[in-house]
Length: 314
Image (cartoon, rainbow, N blue to C red; front, side, top):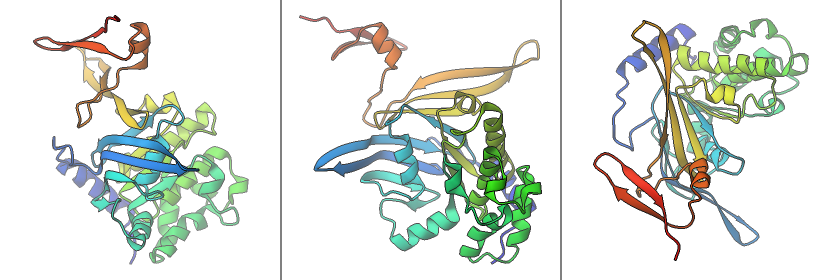
């Protein structure tokens, strides 16, 4: 079966954006995690990498996931991309239940529904194939060989590396390799693209080019994009940044543009703490340190807010 051309995909993306519901139900969304748990066992010791993580991403969103090393963000990405299996909870992407998925369906899911980009450029491309051949390969594996060469060239051109079609990875810069990797990841027209530190090995200017490629895929093809990153220049350019701490979503930053009274466009940035389904929230570490909050705190309910006070030690 031939893959649709880019013009068709762009039209579909526009239609999806126009029809996007954006409901309030916490279990609605293109990507849904609800009480997601992932436990690893090492030498008889259980390690909770994800401890009841909640996350909803709507179709067509471009979201950055941030957090310290060991916070659980890469584990979450591996679960959602089908590379790992959750221990408990809900993990659903594009209607697929990742907890109950059979091995055969998991392979189909990874081949057709999601794309993935690794931080290490060498993991994304086969060194003995040209850029065009690398983009054609996943289409051939998915039995979409007809039109594969044309689609490969179109994708490479869209991402600004069309002139590299006949070069092998060793003949490209790191940034060029990652842009080709983006083309490989979306070769089979996935609904969702996951990227794990895609700019982690690149300088600032080159990282901007790779992020631009991800934005292009999101805007032009309507692909939902989730980026795990430590790069502030990336996380600050998306409308929504989600922070993960200790295996749970702890905070969100949302950015929006509005016109001032003078007619000048202003960027509005608002930060929120996240309340999970059990009513728990994590206070920012800076707040905890500044007020020396330890073990217990006092809460008082005011007409329009909740006040938090340090507990008095006896």
